[in-house]
Image 1 (cartoon, one colour):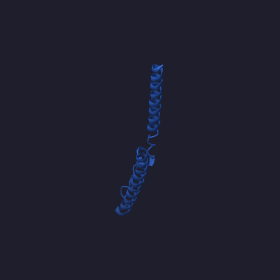
Image 2 (tube, one colour):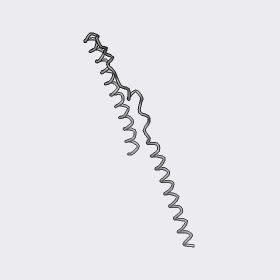
Image 3 (cartoon, one colour):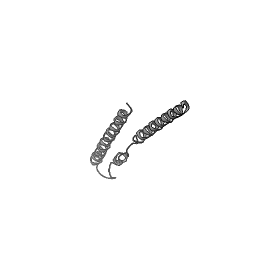
Image 4 (cartoon, one colour):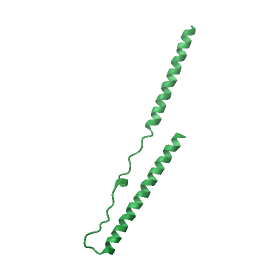
Length: 91
């Protein structure tokens, strides 16, 4: 009778270990990163053309640089938000 009790206790421990492993697996599966925004992969061009006045080329280049910098800040903000979410899950 004692051996049946011991064996049933092992079965309970195995069941709890299996349930814990399944829960850890589900939590890890939820940690997959979302797709990186397509806009964050976009490259910027100045749009300056051969033969156009330098002041116009400078304005075009400056606007392109402004768009690129804004994109970097947007994408960094997106990453920081995702990273903060993952840090909270691990706590």
